[in-house]
Length: 139
Length: 372
Image 1 (cartoon, each protein chain N blue to C red):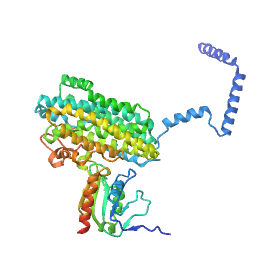
Image 2: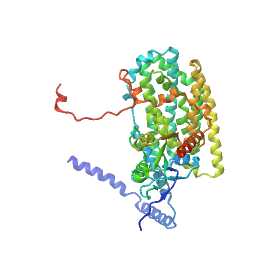
Image 3: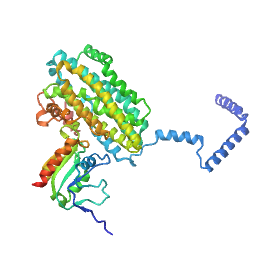
Image 4: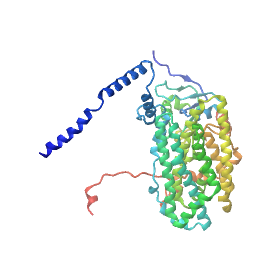
């Protein structure tokens, strides 16, 4: 039997490692969300409606900044076509690399960079991003 | 003939051994073997095995091809990629800039850096090392050894700044100040107490608060100078330290959360309460330390915002909600942009300062390279 890839209709698609910081931030937004699988052995996520991507930033000096799981997800043309905005997590301690994964995705996919947050986001981050998401979906 | 005499002498020594009570020894060995067989048959470990297992736990051969926690490898790689040494940062380009600081500003800078040296020394020789016996995986132990070494590199890097910019007398004065300042000593005392305590989770809390909070009253100053185009090479080096501390705080905080998740609800509440109490205690001391250093230059309030902002991040690294409201964490934008230098703005050809540290590339030599 072929493994059927799950097709879902979330408003948010996110990636979070075992540290779970991004997952924790996304759960605070209170919106339907789907998690990109951690392991390549899991069936790839395929979305069916417009969504906003939330990703942590990895690596240094721009190399490997976008998690490979996110790259795999965006390499699917169908997924990429439905991307409407990006949100990235990071740490200002990394200086000019702060949340650079969001810059890379926004430039490559030509979508707005909606917000940056640190660790699992402050209550202010949740308020700001929810406002921006409301505005985005009203357009 | 000498050879023969010699071998005869040796044979004489063996003759004495032959007289040893071999029968007794054989019986003892046989009895021991029997006891071991009985113990093993009963499904128990012998005393010798128990000793051996305890030893094995400490020095188990590390297998990097069998990773139990992916974070260990991910963080190890990150730390190795971030490796740097102070000798590669052109600090001497700051000598001219150092001369433009007033004597009071120079003294403040020296004191701030000796304070940071003390914290890095503690973290390198006591803190990160104290985490090793608590490690769950051998790879976690290896990551702590890397953290410990880098903290020693950080501690040494401040000495590079001192020897480049200041006189021996100024350096000695600053080190004397660090041993006499009550708030700095108190800060060290609180942290070392927890490192020497017997609770692995509390050790990780103290360590994360040091890595992600206690350094920042010091980190503020080189960022402030950098935002005024002063000591820009020194700031480049401090940024490398700041980057390392972020990985350390994240990792130790992550390992804390792994342990915390396994606790009962009651114990979790206790640990959480303890964390906030320790944060308050450290914050109170840190406010006084900050005021003593920065009151004279009128920067105390600005530094405190930076402290609040980083205290929140330290708590979040431990998985706890931020403490300070956004009204008191609005860090001066000049400091935030000094943390995050834009390559165009910061790269000053004439002062030889660059925002990023680049490891040299090797190029194959050619015959003409050797034609002097």
